[in-house]
Amino acid sequence: MGDLISSLLFQPPPPTYLHPSRHFWLTNKYGNRVPAFFIERPNAKVTILFSHGNAEDLGMIYDWFNDLARVLRVNIMAYDYSGYGKSFGVSPINRVNSNSNSGGNNSQSNESASPGIQMQTGISLQPCEEFVYADIEAAYAYLLKERKLQPEEIVLYGRSLGSGPSCYLASKTAKEGRSVAGVILQSPLLSAFRVAFNFRFTMVWDKFPNIDYAPYIRCPVFIVHGTQDEVVPFWHGQDLFMSLEQQWRAKPFWVEGAGHNNIEALLRPSGAFVDKLIEYLDLHVAARKMGLGINHAASGGEFGNGTKGRPSAPRPVPECINASINTVASVGSIGDGIRTQPSSNNERIIGKRSTGLGASQDSSSNIV
Image (cartoon, rainbow, N blue to C red; front, side, top):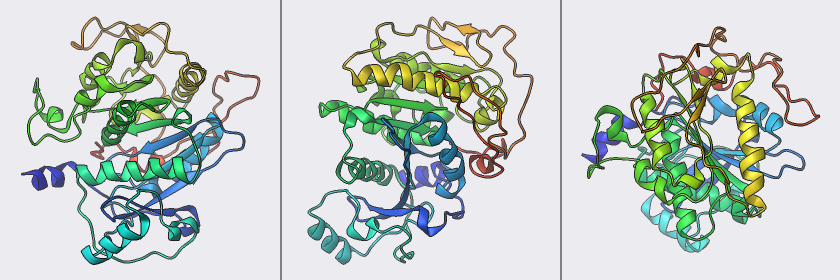
């Protein structure tokens, strides 16, 4: 049953892939080898650890995040899931040897320290929930051990399916007493089964039960969701918001008229999406690094045109007043020189891009 669910949930595309010099290798606790990239910005105070959707890989997202790292002035790390991109497994014998040589930790191996290494071959992998959790743990361990970062400097960002490992790790670090600095969830799901069925509880075979992890998160959580999401219904974002402890509810961003795969494209002309990310990082993450919490918990949300929404309950969908987005950006183009509203004297501009995340923004893609 679990294998059947995984086969429906995960839809890895053929590898698009990066130039070899842009990625390195992580080894998770199962011995699986997964590629990752790290985009470093000068004097960055925050590092974002990104978990992608179910029909993406690193090659599709690199250009977008290279721009985003510059605009947000953060480092960004992303990784592929086991069974995605050029990831591969090892034989049971080699796995035992690998674990014994590395002491069983999840950090990258010596081989992964050299950029531009040649691709290796190994056992093909089938994605599953357990592998995904192990993959983000390996990525997080890399940031702590190799990059010498503190949890307070790391923000988790999960899009769609990527909300699963992000919520898992956020709750795990909180339970361990060293929570990450923040969490960004874009088009998140309550759980895999709840995408198709309106269950009020978590079934035995359910996957990525974010609704169960959310109450244990102990850092500011920023949720972005389109009101016309045709894959993960809008009420998933609302219910997840309400499941968080009140003090950790950063004001959500409900994007009126947006579907599952076009939030960035719809908001590109106004720069609203990037502005909201900057606002969240500047307000909540910086405050948390100084030992402060969110003083005023959000009770509602803001729509894509700045109108306010105040859901008094997880459902129904709140009404939006004249909140349609009049200008729709063409799919496949991420930036066009449109200026965002800077939060400092330094201007933030996303330059032109015709590749990158836009490749996975087509509304016909069933990205979860």
